[in-house]
Image 1: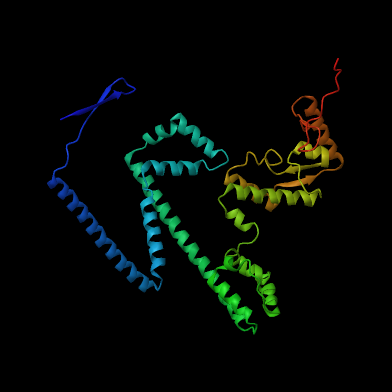
Image 2: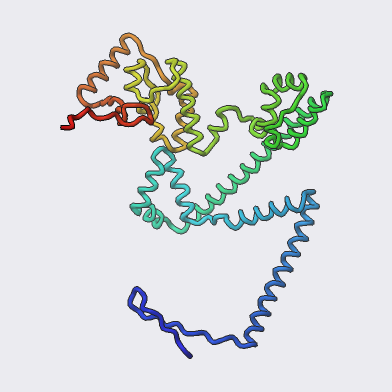
Length: 363
């Protein structure tokens, strides 16, 4: 059998690849028969699946496309479901213990230093089994809570829609029936850019009952129907960006109510010198949003500002003099440095060229 010799690879070894012998007619027939058998089996499975999905669609009174999408989604979730291993359970409950501002940093340090592995290896088999059992119970409780929450939200939506439909159905204006379709189908985005006329009775009803216009009721129906008002949905969020925006809004509104200007100075020393105010009730004074990154810390700040525990406070008289004297003493000792804003490198506007150098004698 002839062999093909290749050039030396990076390791300096000579690779020799043997040339495969051609397939015999009997081997080709066996390979072809095997492929036909695979195709037949998968075709049978597809036909059985189609029959089952059709029966499910009749039972649920849904279209076959709707059932197929849900089935594929369920299959994907089942494939991607994580198994509750002992180490996953150990990490889960260890993270619960360190659920504070620096919890993630502690977990990273413990993981890189090997402390987590050492602590996990020190557990007995019974302790590992107990951790897995607790994690499975936690996941079941979380899944059940999610189902109950979705069911409660759907119930609220249906009750509100029924209440609105009863009122709108009594109106004579034909366009009010269009609103019934919007609310009943719960598809407000499709009509978001559409101008719809409605009678004065509908507007009075929505203003009195739901404190909003019919446009707001239709466009924001999903969020509005489950009782989310401004700020409530943000606090429920897990996204640090959303929580940061909500915390900034509350701090800014509190600043405006005390100082009157639009933009707060998020530095206790500068705000004390310029406006005679300081942020009280929060560790370190005014919040530093560059360091507040975790949802737990942001929710804590939001709750403190809402309750009035953390707030901007204006000082006058002896208290103001005492604070200013203490700040001046810290500045003299070098404990506090209040740096002025650096001047721009170009002395003109944002896009202006740099200021020219002084005129020089060409001689």
